[in-house]
Length: 168
Length: 283
Image (tube, rainbow over all chains, first blue to last red):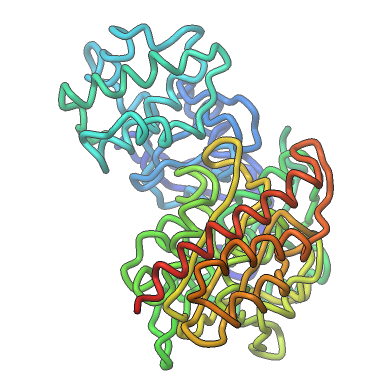
């Protein structure tokens, strides 16, 4: 959907979030991260730096990772967005989440959703990544507890367990 | 860290985008991948009244073969797609290699070639790569399309020949010589480079060696180029040209690195990139 030649301060958007159709009117300046958290109550997407450096707000947009703090909700009009909630089974944990738990790959947990989303994209493209590939794929996700060793272990363990299952 | 209010438009065609720019003279900004502009908006370092989102312009998202063995790359091509494109890897592998070094995966999934060139960060990879490839850009404005060589496009820190009422529509890459090399030093994968070098090298008389992170814009290292063009297959050439590259630049000291270290990197990275390029020249 295009707006034509009239710039708007508020507009109506329609998108699929975790498989569900959503339609809302939003302010043009609203970020996708704030839209997910404030308008839809999907607070699993965390907002850290708000300028694309920390990776905590990473979501999948049409199947590829994006910083939701650097995307306007208006730009997600027509898109398919998957958040950490959409990667979580109705009951229990996904294999990737289970590996994070088993490897003690979360400390405060703030970076974890972004780490899981970025790892999901990695494992979809490379089901058996090397440690170097895991480290590179997660280089854009900061863990302020500096728990990287266990995070990398968790992703490698999940890969061995065959976690490369698509999200919703 | 929220942007100031603005009005937002998402045109369907490049002509509409140009009309939107003309309707808000000096007040409108184009939004492509948003990986540089959105942080500036969030920090309120930029406060445009109108944001023209060009992500709907499918006509600018194509990669096509050029008539002369080169390429025409739409400005909206994302770094991930540039890096993965078989056509780019075949015809301008330097461009694909440079794209792989931009930011992190999530940034490469959104960031665009045109956006990187228009933003003109002096430490960015793609401006240096297009200059090394002797590419040109097509700028679409109210009076139609004009073509500007990469050599004339970059004017200084975050400054280009793109006028406020123009849209960078495409990048025209001529047939590339067989030799190419790319080397950069960044503290972590995905960080902006402290310095880097992009090279194209021909078997006879052609060398373009472009440094980034070494000046206020991508910088041709002309002393190094002269040595490389004169004797591309001389085994001592990469080291001699590297030494010349150090003298070709006058980098600045900042919080990330000293001028001396950057000059050292210019030397080492030029030598590395030239060795790569020589290896690809064949016999």
